[in-house]
Length: 215
Image (cartoon, rainbow, N blue to C red):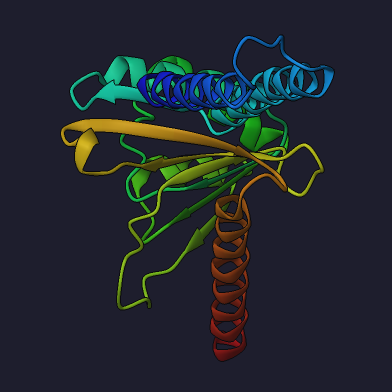
């Protein structure tokens, strides 16, 4: 919110400077001409247009900031995010936010309806339980580096797909920040989708190779 207010102040300052300039370039003791009034009106229209676009962009790429210790608030956010979506793809390291009974019931219901995919470095007890209930589990232990990215995509493979991704910057130090992006609005969404497809195909290939060796 501070960022959007800062941009609004900047736009107001630029707008005010432009209006003063237009007024001051008129000859002394003469009224503003129709042309100059047209310029002023055009400036006002463009000011509100740019402000509206900034507000729309802010809410499209909105962020949710939590304190690291606010585990309940983070889990509640994730619960609402997963609940509002259809097929869900979770790219995680340890599913530390999925400890509560309410969340587990939701994930369990998703798994039983074949609406849950989980991507993680190695199988853990929570993922194994969900796998037994129907969830698709994709591991990537063979990767030299464990990706820092953590995100949850809802309505996977649909036009209205959205992704909530954990990120941040030095100004968010000590905070858990989640950004939301919709399909086609930001390259971040495409990168998240690519990561899902890469790990999914890699895990499938390894699984088929393992099954072939057993035969």
